[in-house]
Image 1 (spheres, rainbow, N blue to C red):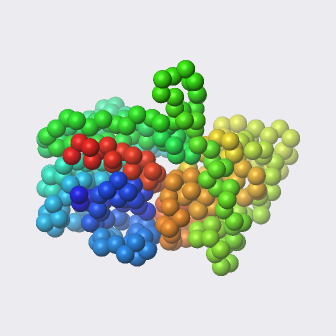
Image 2 (tube, one colour; image 1 turned 45 degrees about the horizontal axis):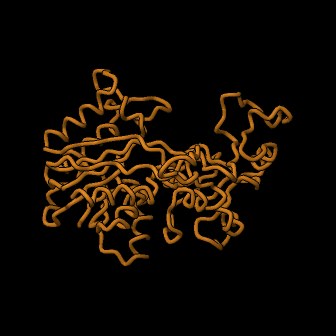
Image 3 (cartoon, helix red, strand yellow; image 1 turned 90 degrees about the vertical axis):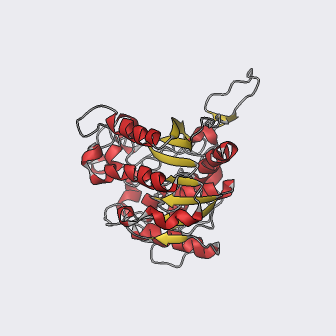
Length: 353
């Protein structure tokens, strides 16, 4: 069955959807570095998918009608709906891009739509300030097109991904009401008396401990995307933090190390815990290695996101004190859907369609 990927990013949904049995015929993605990553992935896999590196609003969905698209999937820009920072919702053009999903679905009429976004989408206001109004409008648009939408907030760790990450997933099936989100397979709390006991959460160490030592930026890569860009000063500051903790609560650290951090800065200068899943990977605050005084590398990010090692990220790796206009490698991963979870949900979609 053929699938069309919109707002593709670096391909998290794509990899999962293809692993479930779909064939992605095309990608639409605006960011130039994410496009380069998709092109490299296509090259490695000898793919035939077309990649459109342009604004989705400039594309006429009719060009895909001959492909007979079965699944439309993607992750529209989520910053405007996020609970972190300003929530401009539909007042921000990025928020309006969510409705491009309905525009494409109205013309292509796929049997199913598969969308991921931040959970803040559920409460984001509409243009009149109504709480949850943006999401309500989107669901109404899908319903008008004869889709039956279902949605839920999923913690990725509940499905065997070594990362605690809550996102809203929306699956809409055309003209039928048969889709059910898969039941969790893992749990933080174990219940030995349960008839069907769940597996314990996956820990981060299992996924990153067998990587070789990373190379410094500018040196020849030993392992793709496994590059350490930690400034010397940041390495010194994180040396005061024990495994699983963060700098602002370290009372033994001198003022010159704590600087302007406050007790609320729980994600800054934070180490992962070897025996637990990672916290939600983010593009702004990169977590530190559990035992070494350095940031996680992009490859370690990818491992914690269940990306295959055969995916090679393209584009710059931002030093945490610097800036990059487009998506750097850490942000490409942080914005993606974990492929393993995408595969699990896509398999459930296949059962219905």
